[in-house]
Length: 173
Image (cartoon, rainbow, N blue to C red; front, top):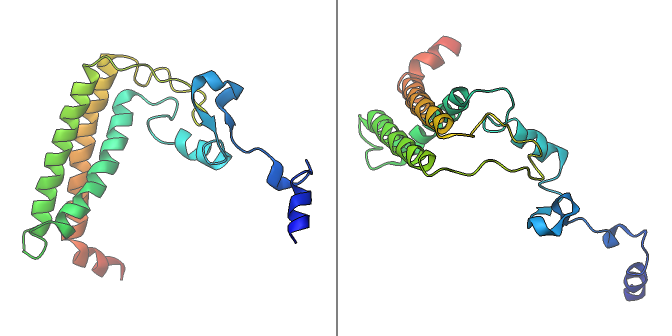
């Protein structure tokens, strides 16, 4: 058995001898690697369909989509795992905590927009970053303000669904 393994090390046709990690764009000076994970078609498709990289969206639309998703999922841990989880006001506490965190995150986005962030660079996963997405302080501020609106909206939707779960289940089940 050991001889077969040793013999396969010398065969270029053996799949175990193929390289799978390369420098990005075959340029080692970039300091990035092209791996089977970040260069796979599935990874590229998924990343390029996220609102931050989807072409043709305005910064406000990007912020609204990202904010809605974050507001919606941030509500759950605060409502169901927070210190008031066993009280009648657990959902309200989760809503207020989620809104508070969205406001803090919006403040962080505003601070970042004022720091003159660099332009998006092409990478293995996103070879063509959107040109109009985050290219100025104004676009970052539009993203942040829409993130606030979307985040509060997402938290309110999650609160409404969680608080009225019995009614919703009665309608469909």
